[in-house]
Figure 1 (cartoon, rainbow, N blue to C red):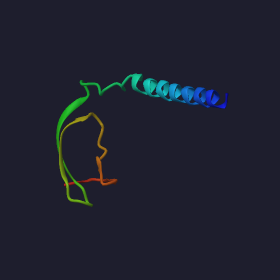
Figure 2 (cartoon, rainbow, N blue to C red):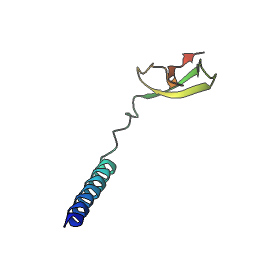
Figure 3 (cartoon, one colour):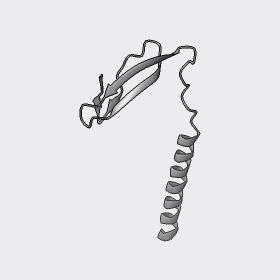
Figure 4 (spheres, helix red, strand yellow):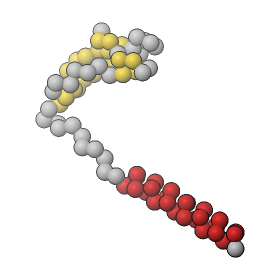
Length: 77
C-alpha cells in the first residue's frame, strides 16, 4: 500500500513539474522595440575588464544606456 502512495505522489510531482515547464514555454515573448523609434547611430564601446570592443549601429530614440559586459558597464570610446 505504501508503494502505491509513494508512486502516486511521485507521479503528481512529475505532472506538476511538466505542467509548470509547459506554462513557462507557452508565455508570449515581450513586444519588440517600435521600429519607428529605432535610428541609425555610430557608437563605439569598450569593456574595461577584458577589452572587448563593440560598435552599436542602431539604437532606440533616447536609449543612451551603455551595454554591460563582464558585469560592468562598458565605456564609450
